Length: 223
Ligand code: ADP
Ligand code: ADP
Image (cartoon, rainbow, N blue to C red; front, top):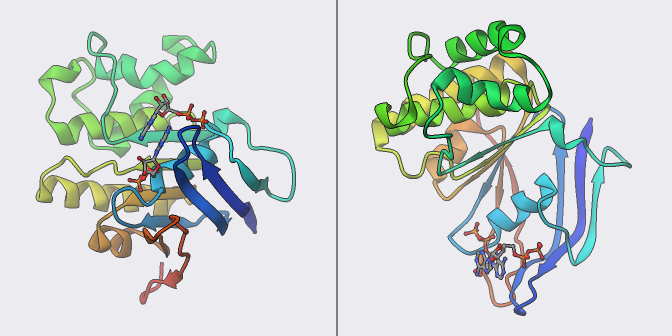
């Protein structure tokens, strides 16, 4: 079933830059969809619109034929992990639950389970500066997923990591998604990464006027 349809979506910023023009895109429940395209083609803009962090200047975002998805149902992972530097791994992952009024003790089982899922068991008390880039990214993913959002939005999450770390994280993310089947929209400029991870790859192309060139490519192997 359709989770979200973008219909004729455009975004013109106040400085006159057209980032998106007439985008039509349907995201199905359980998709692992990659937005693939060169720098500056509007991928982040599209993701921010989906996240509700920005509004389109034309067209509509249609959440399952009406309404809008509750913000709490969306997890966001950026390239920069944005962890609380003074807080432990455990407390960083607790944060979204804490904001919902859930005590540390009550949140503990969910936090431990999420940390196990991202292979960080044993690092609960570490603080971010003691962790590698890959481990910080794992904490970010755990923090985004601990509330069990229906949709996970990822903006070039692994672009700053070395190749091997990136490949390990790709595998772990894929494993998480295969187990839980949440919907993922994954922004990348890596062809390899998009094909490895996704069941749908939507290609965006930079053009004069920055038209969103949408091709949905089904991966050649089953998911
Ligand atoms: P991508 O994620 O594919 O690299 P972006 O969505 O970040 O592309 O940007 C698309 C275009 O819109 C770029 O030309 C960028 O400079 C411009 N842009 C992005 N955000 C803003 C903004 N808030 N105001 C003005 N221009 C913006
Ligand atoms: P919206 O109209 O969707 O609220 P804004 O135009 O207010 O978006 O810009 C959102 C943010 O992006 C602002 O914090 C702005 O400073 C920042 N920004 C401005 N220009 C650019 C740019 N060229 N590329 C990326 N981000 C930008």
